[in-house]
Image 1 (cartoon, one colour):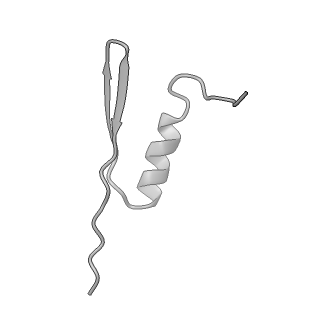
Image 2 (cartoon, rainbow, N blue to C red):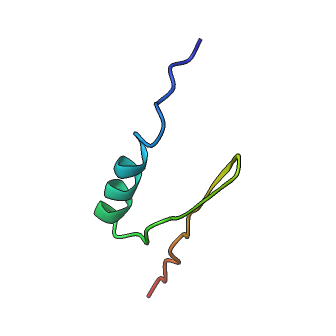
Length: 47
């Protein structure tokens, strides 16, 4: 059996890690029985 995190426990970690990587914060959508995370990837431009 795999260990899982408790409710909400990983969200601050995700936000902190994305901030450290200079990436935009995710959008969290919480509706009746559904929790969705939209993570926006940055586009890397080569010069």
